Length: 510
Image (cartoon, rainbow, N blue to C red):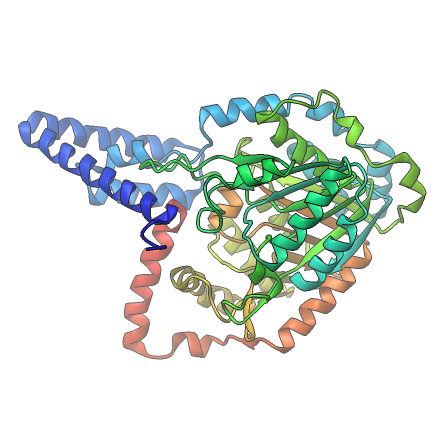
C-alpha cells in the first residue's frame, strides 16, 4: 500500500496514461489519410535538419537523428515533445531576475588575479575562464578543510551549525528524514528560536521518493523559510530535466560546506545500501564563501524576492583576521541557462595541461567525445590518468553504461579502478600536486549539460595534498580493471558490445 500510494508510483501511472493517450490519438489521426502521414514524415525531416544545424553536443544530436530515422512517422513529433533540454522560459525569466546584479556583487579583485598570474599562468588561465564565463571570482584568505568521507563532513557540519548567529542557508538535491537530516533539523529549529534567518532550498525531483510533496509546510511551520526548486509535474515532457543538483550549507557568510554529500543517511553510512558509501567534500572558511552565498541568494530571490542588498550577507569584517591563507580558492556554479559548459571546459583544461598525473573520483561515466579524447590524449602523452568508479553500483543500467567506456580508455593507457568496498559518490579531480576541483559535478551528461551544479577550484591549497592522499589510499583498496577481463569471452563481448553501443547512443537523451 505504501508503494501504491507513493508519489512516484502515481506519477509513473499518470505519465504512462499520457503516453498511451498520445500514441492512440496519433495513430488515429495518421490513419485518417495518407496526406497527414506524409505531413508527419516531412516534420521528421525538418526536425532532423534542425537537430543537425544546432550547436549542441554531437552525441545528443546523433541520438535524436537516429530516433527520427528509426521512427520517421513519429520521430519529429517526439523531438518536439522531448527534445528541448534548455530550461523553461518561465525558469529562465525568473532566474535572470535573480541574477540581475551579479556582475556588480561578484567582481574580481584585480590584485588577486594578477598575483595568481605571476605564480602560475596556467592556473590563472583556467581561473580567468571561470571568472569570465561562470562569472565567479577567485579569492585568497580562505581556509579549506578536506573531508574524505560523509561522516567527517557531517561532524563538522553539526559543529558549525551550532555556532550560527545570523543566518543559515541550505541548498540540496536530496533531503530525507533520518539520523542525518533530523539532527540538522533539530539545530535549525533551535536557531530559528534564537532569531537566526534559516532558509532551505531542495530539489523536488531529487526528493521525489524521499519526502512528501508538502514537506515544505513542515519546515515553514517551524519557522524555516523554504523553496522547492522546479516542482515536478507529471507531464510527458523533458522540460523537467533541469534539476538543482548543488549541495551547499552556508553559515553566517563565513563558512560553507559543499561536495557530494546530500542530507540522507546513506551518505554518512548510517544506512547501508550499496556497501560502504564513500563520499567527499570541503569546508571553506573565509572570503571565498561569498561566491556560494551569491549562488544561493540568486536562486532564492528569483522566486522569493526579499533581499535588495546581498552585501548584508558577505563574510563578517570582525572575522577577517581569523581567515587563513590557504592558496587561491575559486568556487563556481554551472548553469544550463547560459549554454556555456563550464564544468566540461574546466575538466578539459586540467587534462590538456596536466604534466604528471590526474586522479579522478566519479560515481558515473557517460562522457562526450571531447572528454573521452582528452582523457586518452593525456594518458598517451605520459600523464598518469586514473579514474575511480563504484565497485557496487546504485543503478545497474548506469553501471553498465559506465563500463562501456572502459576499453578505449584502457587501451589509451588510462587506469580505471572500481571501489571494492562499495559505492563511490565523490566527485573530484586532483592534478600535479597543485590543482584540484571538488564539488557536485559527475562525469555524466546530466551533471555536465543539464543540471545546476557547483564546484571549487583549489590551487596551492593544503586540501590538494589531502585529496591526493585520499586518492592513493582509495587505489589501494580498489580493484584495478584490466583490458583482458573486459574483453573476456568472444560471444559475450559481441552481444555485450551491441548493448553497450545502444546505451551510449541514447545516453545523452535520458
